[in-house]
Length: 366
Ligand code: 5AD
Ligand code: FES
Image (cartoon, rainbow, N blue to C red; front, side):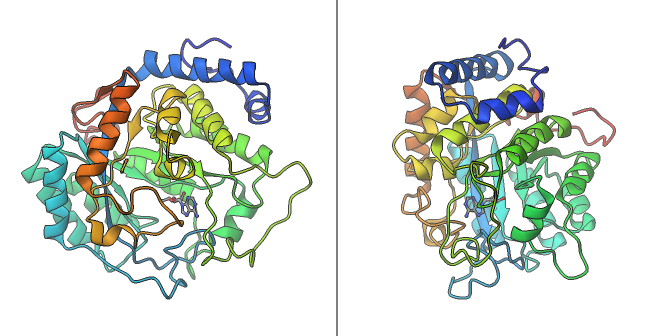
């Protein structure tokens, strides 16, 4: 395995054999090449993206997610524009180049309302703005891009259509096609991020290899992956919905499998921004973030959400950082980056080092 421009020749069969690899010496080689590729392609800077979880309302019924509409005992919140702006100013004070606004699919957040919030952030700060608002109608995506949003995150979760349909019911009359949505986000001029959960019940090695291959086909600018973490208040967590797979085919939701996918993502998309995710930090609170950063990742997402809302953004249980405040997460992540001998990134840190993510010209190659 060479590491020149990642591994453009790595095919699905190679990916699959890495996912099944158990030999420690060979895995060390995978980590080494992923780390070397990361250094060569995106450098030693670790970019900080300040995460603001702006609403935990959601109209969807995803079988895995604690924010699903059917989770009736969860107390719901939606942040005000002023609260969001306060977080954005905190991001600037902490030296972050980007804020990521994330929410459930919440139509209480209207297109024009969020466009206004984006415009305010762009007018009052130098921040790049990333949105992660679910499968919104095209008109909203257009309005937010016009307002200045630079990037959009939408994980496709799994490329296995049957599994996707089982765990992610469509809204009545609106089939869910996240791959098509990712393509139209790109046409609108967004930098585009996606990713998957690892170890979803019913997920096979074959389908996970296809997911990683699809990262390359989509030429993703950002790739976020993390372990599936069972939430007892969901149909997948309670085993109410299940899909059996043949013996030996189920992908485990282990830390090791997450590192393999992070490393392979780096090799198939050498220039991508890849976070060491909170879900990974949740299953290894001591060193998960660091090991992700040592095996291909170059981004972390310190949480800026006000403490009173954090525990309510319960996508999965025992999430890392629900009791910490923004300053604590900031100090914690900076110290972890420095302990690795890496530097904290400055500026927006878009793909190709672009100043504010992407050009507004939808025909520009990103
Ligand atoms: N375990 C791990 N990740 C989850 N997500 C949602 N529910 C879970 C869970 N139970 C991830 C999905 C979603 C992202 C915001 O959080 O991949 O896209
Ligand atoms: Fe929040 Fe470490 S990142 S406490």
